[in-house]
Image 1 (cartoon, rainbow, N blue to C red):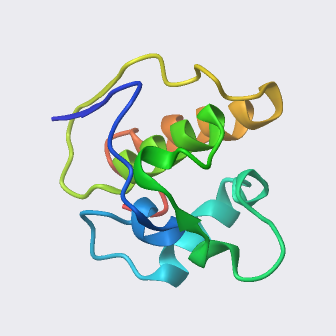
Image 2: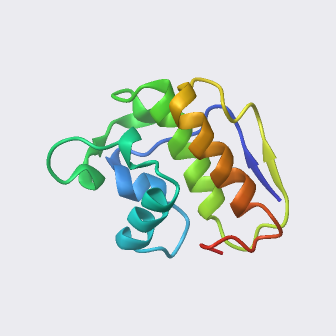
Image 3: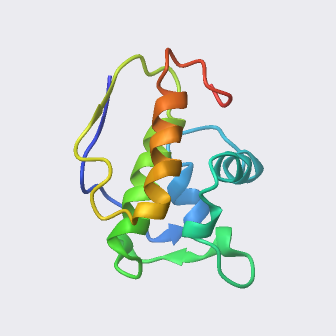
Length: 116
């Protein structure tokens, strides 16, 4: 069972390390996952945006960006049979909600999504 709450700890580290925290996924795996669900636009900026520094608890990110990190991090966890989401769409803009809902629906369907 994995609980994804509304607010979790973000590390003072890179974006990619925050996304893959607690998993064995490579940076490329995370990038492929974000591309698959059309979520790269949430984080993209000039340069190597996956290496973007994240301040403690994501203080340099919008609430929507923080929420997407929590959700992707949770979905990427392996060996999860049951997910519990606490208001997963709060603070996420309408254009991103569709992608997030697709990710949740596909990746929690019996853990048989393309990245499980």
